[in-house]
Length: 347
Image (cartoon, rainbow, N blue to C red):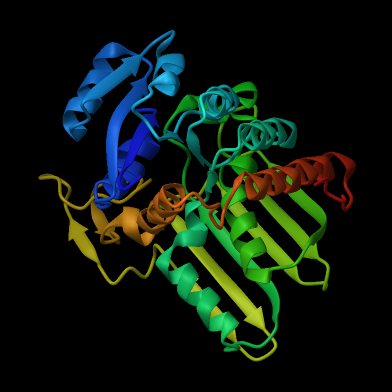
């Protein structure tokens, strides 16, 4: 295999804003088909991105997974469709990329991991934050001993709320901001600390939205060497996307701000369009756009790595096993909120 023929599942925000712009930069990948909910939206998506084939509606998911011309499937669907999509792709012996979180629960994630292992296919857990260029540079600094032994990681992701209503419905999403965004910050800290998570303690609250899931959370993950990962997430923060993390070590400290110190400051009245910032609550005033968000947030490197691994038949650095561990930690966090104590995670 010299070129990867990829089928993309989903025509929503994650694919429109991040995966397709990133995939367009990879000459070794051809997006050969797309699946969506309705014919009109899917055909428009296919035309806009130059995708030659599209599937839609009932039976469309099964058809794209059975398409013998495709080598791999990229799952960018809502959480409640991940299990079915991954299972269908695995049954048809396709390599699989699945957007975070892997499952709504650890039980679902475990089923997806088992399906991929049973089929013997390459499985890639799409957690973009560990592939952010700044995060990878930070890991190189730590490996070189720049801050000594890592003692704690504090990470935050916040904005004023997700794009679609299914995120705010527990049965469809599996949880609120803890699952949706906490999965990012928990995994970033885990990959930096590089130890076994020992126990988890968490707080959640619904403070700003009339929804049946939490819109704010704080999660503490304690590791085998007593290192601490502190993950903070919110759907109540005005002013646009806020992504930052701090790493503390015995010999130094690293601060990373992905969205507030982009090097670009734009003031606009908003009357004629212009700068676009993800999750911005206003199109006027001072804005801090990132140049090439799909690159800055790690999607290009993530999908380049996954494509290389699939083409060379080897497992990537982030697999469904990692996604399963993250789901176990998230489940433990939810249990901690109910039990009001530290919880030892499964997995």
